[in-house]
Length: 364
Length: 107
Image (cartoon, chains in turn green, yellow):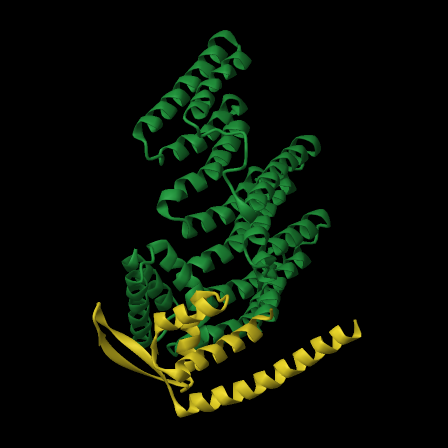
């Protein structure tokens, strides 16, 4: 635990390109703090609380750190990007008549700023809305794949999960997105909405793999396999899909027997409880809104935007409010909605400017 | 409470406890958190900043538990800074108490 903590701290300090001697000094100090806390009878979890998350520690240390000189070069490029973008845009427009989609070059202004000033992991997450928009527009304009091209936006939460979650939790956390992608592909391309929805069972099936009791894992996995087999058998052989669904009472019953399925939220306590309820309601609302807009109004092209509400609500519920954190999502919605509903993509890219503006105003 | 304001108070408290005798990092954290409600993980960055500003000197001393420890010792500059803080803070508190007392009298 101590080794991992110090390793994480060193990694972040190195990503910031802090001075080598200073990094060694800080690591030595934290090693001492850790040992002293341990000698005082603190547990690893308590020490983690006392010392703070490595990334927050580095944020707090920023004003006393010395950085290598070449970090300045990055800021020069950031400062030059607006000019480079305007020149590139003019050349694309006047010489090649590519005014549209030539405006995409302006997205390079916030993107370069993110690359130059953000740590690797956070940079990928912060860049994900831009990369998704670019991929979405290419799929839409070039291949008319607005739907299911919107699925590239799932890259935004997926990148955040992959880069910020421990390997152990990552597969569970990412499984809903993978299941959604498979479900949509099976549904639209092979008309397998049913039994395609069974892919969502991968979420609990992967989740139970991490239970410490191996017998419980076996019982759960077996019950899922039996239930799926029964469902498919009843459906394909007798056309009795609804009766086949009764098979899922088996894993549900095992969940009740083993005490994992409870009809209460008492297991979650304190202020976290309300937040978890808000998150669950948000997810249900988003899925309902997405399906309603898609099926009722045939709004698949724009309905995906409701899913951006999930990371926004998560940030608002679990983090300190900073507009900079939600600015990429607000910008994507403004950009796409103004562009799509008013056919003004050539102007709506300006919405992305709120990201560096928010960052400058909040960090100044 | 305003973060900058809180940081200022913490700086003053750290200067105050190391003013009396030299201390090592964890000792400062323990002492502070036993007296006031403080976010413990903000203490070391403040210690480091104050050291880089020349308000503390550091030296290493061998310990019984094995690894040597870094101790923080207040400098003359640190003492001056602490006196400034103390004067400002006393004047500020006087004003606050006067206002609170005045409001109580009005009621």
